[in-house]
Image 1 (cartoon, rainbow, N blue to C red):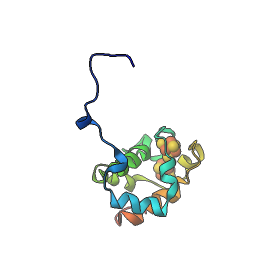
Image 2: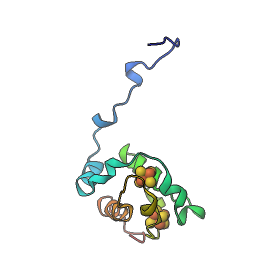
Image 3: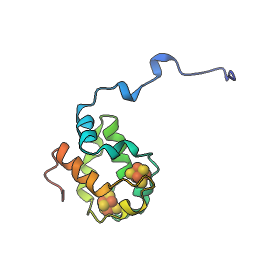
Image 4: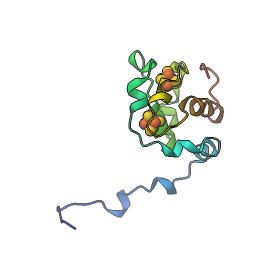
Length: 113
Ligand code: SF4
Ligand code: SF4
């Protein structure tokens, strides 16, 4: 291995699979495909709502994985469930169904969900 003169110390390494995140585990049980997401951003690039609002499904999924849902869940109120993101997802994730499941697990009541 090449020595660049710097590196990650063990204390700076975060193993995301070891972080307790019960809400995301519940979502994963309901919607196993959420773990297929490779954060490519195709959904965000094609989003009908993303042109005019902060809606970004890629960011929502990443924040849920990290237990930081408060930062991005409000974005979902802009989602129109049009399904364009589903058409372009290279992993074949049923994103509309995923968004509805997120609404159920995280109890979003003031959105279109
Ligand atoms: S298009 Fe699919 S794989 Fe890519 S970020 Fe969106 S949900 Fe994840
Ligand atoms: S279903 Fe929602 S997240 Fe997907 S493209 Fe339509 S508005 Fe965007």
